[in-house]
Image 1 (cartoon, helix red, strand yellow):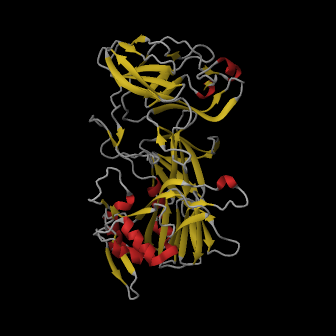
Image 2 (tube, rainbow, N blue to C red):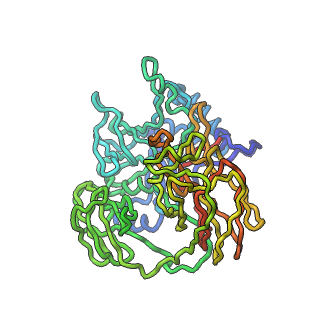
Image 3 (tube, rainbow, N blue to C red):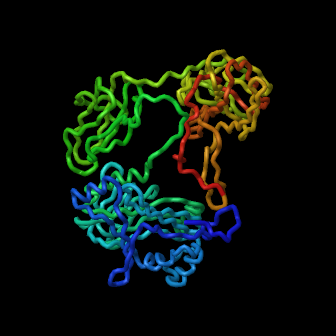
Length: 565
């Protein structure tokens, strides 16, 4: 989709964009003049599947009535607005809600072995008493559809008097045994099946509030973005690997950039890999007690699996099966670097694995704590909530949530002792001495007690401007109706507390607190750090570091951020 050259504005109006069809997609009309898209299954794995298993070279997508009308209009000359006007003239009320700035980008990918058709909806919703659904009439028909429920799936029939909307997570699939179509999505969970050949996904809902629940009269009002996708396949959902395709939509490959440096792991490295798609790895984390790793898996097909393997990069020293809170519940079998997994249909399993010392280790980052004067008590323990304050209301950080040494990004920070003076309030400018050594960065944990504060930090005469964010409140939010605005705060969070302490001795549950990390370059031998003069800024910890990997950055945005208007 490209921008209309006639539009000189810098801001993109989606209705002025000119959609273009993917030239690599073939299409034709059948005897009833219905359009059929033919998407080539490219890539190494698809080539093998075509030769060995007889997989077709092309997947076919049958367009519905409105799709048959719209496809020929996407000719590279008409804008989205012009196409929408033609759709409205042709279909009338059936096309509504057409003018809630509903814009769908249809991305027909033609690289690798990707067979998805992604539909990205950008909706500014202002329609009362309405339920918006995406409907998918299909060329396959079955009395039941299969719905993903997170761990496993369920079959549910076509709607009847006592069964309408149902829930599902990443996908729903309709197959007749020989062929099927899966509908994937990244954020919606309400589905229904009005006919044997049709699935519908609920996108937005503003209920009628004429008689009750007046607070819901503007439910879902505002800006929304979401993606749902179509995947045609042979056989059923298990043969097609729909579970994996749903995961790939919801957890796309992430990429990073990093400064050039010697590497010892080669071009490929995997921390854990399953020997069969019947076993899906749902989580991998360090154990809460600090010893070993926790890996959570589940069986994906509804059939028992025995002797599946999870391969780790080094030899396994010990392994045991644990429950959800990491308590031992049984022994686990392992051979060398392989953990052996037995699981019943859709059964979840959790293991604690201790690995041998790796032959390759990243060099430790050298850190040194910086001493500085403290003049305020802002971190309190439970018995002494009333004697600390971080703001004018005398709220404070909860010490029980904050370790003595905070570790973030491989850098260690030492916080002050609770219930005594433990932070530096910058009511006056203070200069501190920096430790000497092979350091290239200075990091500061700080927050503001009143709004986001602009500040200047001085290192041996070199000035750095930075924003010190507010210690609590929302980190980001989407716009809602005309009541709130979208925003995303700058700043790197180094610590999160899920409640704060109040002066009256109570915990302020779910009022989150944050410590933000500020980082500045320092020259070899840097000696003095001068902090800003601002009584609304509090300094919690300072560390100098020889961090040579600080330049590693996301190459793509991993978060689903609000649209800033």
